[in-house]
Length: 256
Length: 256
Image (tube, rainbow over all chains, first blue to last red; front, side, top):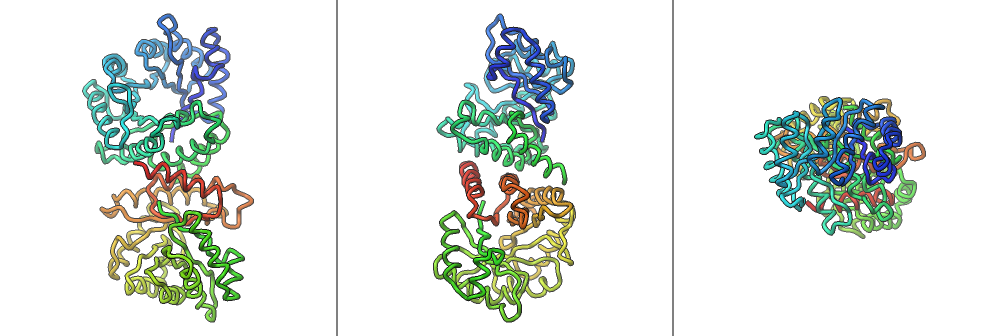
């Protein structure tokens, strides 16, 4: 399983401040810390940006590229922000993400196709909602994949993310269960005839709820999804308990 | 995932003493406690028994049957001990286990066939050794299944156990990884055309090593195997951390 650090996000006040001040140093320190703590990739998420701040993704890319050669994931719902980040990238990043929303299909998908990048497919419908069941998620995966293949991408470029819920959602547990089933089905290869890559953002589960739920929830969901064949996890690599879990899973799964 | 309590074992001094004294009460108290703590089945393991104590399995069966209707797993390498326990059972138990060892194939397999019980197939070779790789374990599964089908059992009656190592073994981590791969392969249905049942004894990992390794190892391996499709886990249901993990996994996996 590949681990991407989700720490370079504007939800982190240090990152938000550095982006505001156009100060590369704290971003670079954090990128290095993530690399030292086992990240294979860095997810860059500058958050919601007003028009005049859309250059912040490029700034973030340039800052971290000065100190690390780790591959990057550009994480934004805004096509212009992704385009700006992409232009600044030394190596091809992964774009995160397309959904079934019209704007994303019309502007983010072509960006991935023109630049032939890998692309995350969030299993969210036209209104950005996650279907509640395995069947709904699989139907979305089929639809989104067709759009991507028609646009000129290949299965090797696609990364399916069933979207872990926040535990505040009333249907959080059934959603997590359906996400688990979806990862297992996609990873088995029986849906598309080939196994496809899957990803989840683990921190979504307890976002804003760190005091209510123990980190054990993330630790368990990570192991469960690893068992189901998950390819890539976005993880808070600076959390010691999660880092230990990643090492334990590595120790078991890298030794077939 | 089905949970069997592994607490009724002679490795527990309370059980050993009660078996020695032919005192049913501590065994009954323990069986009730396991039932209250979420066990779906009880594994009964009277340990190594000399000839004149081979009746201890039947005593154990009779004791627990007086207080619970939970299904039983009779756990012994000794065919006579299994036969004695089987004769005392009100309902059909699961027999645990056959291996590729000649004595087991000649005496335990026929017992399961005659009484048409479910049977655990430990993936151990003629000398009771676990093969180190996925390929070796799968080859053993194929061989053992053929013997069982030839003896008149059906796939529905077979439960494959790849045998988790003790962490003291020099190749413990690669063994655990190969066990994980084996569970995933067997559960996927691609080996035999139908998914088959799988089981592990989780406590094997830290047996005698509780002070050296944290319970998190068992917790993580349980989630990983659950994700891989494990059917049945033998677990110390009286360990609060393991019980919480079982509840968390249930909460996620029972809601598809």
